[in-house]
Length: 388
Image 1 (cartoon, rainbow, N blue to C red):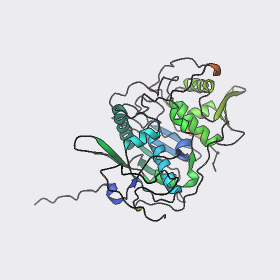
Image 2 (image 1 turned 120 degrees about the horizontal axis):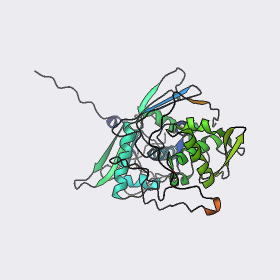
Image 3 (image 1 turned 90 degrees about the vertical axis):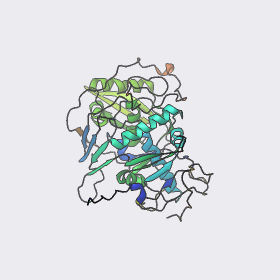
Image 4 (image 1 turned 90 degrees about the horizontal axis):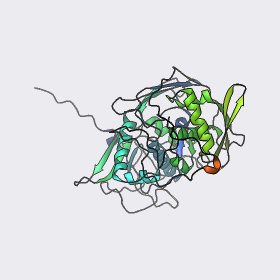
């Protein structure tokens, strides 16, 4: 007589859901993700791994050939999730790694369109986030240890009988969640970040925000060091050209970039010019756990999760329970030389500051990569130089 094996239950069955009510939250980013190369900077599919080490902290990122590595545009999903969690924690609400939301909320928050194609590309982004494997020793605690995880443990669509998508849900890894609810590991970012179209451009803003931050004297990197820090597969000379183009465009919100030279060394000086962004302004009182009590919508004033009529009709509403330095020292080196893959041609020469166009804010094209076709990079609006 055969014996039926027990069915492994979903992780969601052991977690109380954190229901996103409105999606209104100031964007925040996780500092570890801003400082190290965790994502592909190209929209074309990347399967070559990232192997990187800095100041004793090791990062390894591996992609499945079928889907490719999660891109820096896919990381918008994680920025949005971090923003929602921090906003709720600052309001004294209980959060969880298990998020429930509508795709419309997420897409609007990160400046994307909400057409059928954008919903499809969002699902492709979730697939890459789930299939990308990360192995790192960052935040290894008192005793040395290595953490391995994917950016999303599992995700699911909630659809009606006629096929209409009414909601989504996913589970974040414990490593990322703990890095978000720790006040010292989160930084506010400029909402204009979502309007940046280039992969190197987006990555460079996050580096600028993490290292130069609000320091009036700014921060300086040499170009080869930045190249290693980015995890880019582009050749050093092509990467250097990308940096020079960004300097000419002056496109990073809140920062002025300047190329300097010390002998034969080429340096990038990053200087803050707009100190509107700041670290998370309210400490998190308690550390949430995987079994945190579930929450629904909130009646708290000024909250990003304030009371509102039910939106996620597939899920019953739940009552809210009671409220329960910037380190710039950095020394990096790659573990092995990068090889060129998925390089693309530059679309145009840099414009002088007086000729700079106003950034396209229509977002008629999604930043997520089409998982089915893996076409050449298609930035928001018009292309702004090559995407590394």
